[in-house]
Length: 85
Image (cartoon, rainbow, N blue to C red):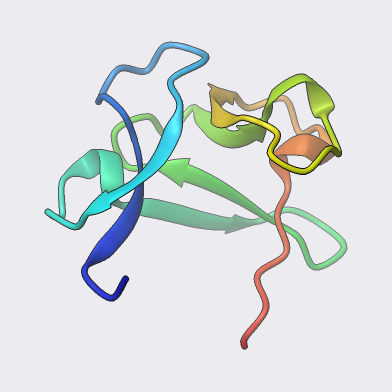
């Protein structure tokens, strides 16, 4: 998957735009801005929607939970840990 990227399925700034994996094109809806929050966690925002964050829908902790773009609220479901392999 070296030529793939996580992206929002559109450049819309609307809540609920799903994240997906597609061929990398370098478009703004594939470019992520990583911002430190607290406790070693990060906020992931798309260059096309800087007021939003990558969000786990419904604050779910279940396997297979939907991940989408949502307005930044600072909730735990919008904060991510980035670890080296």
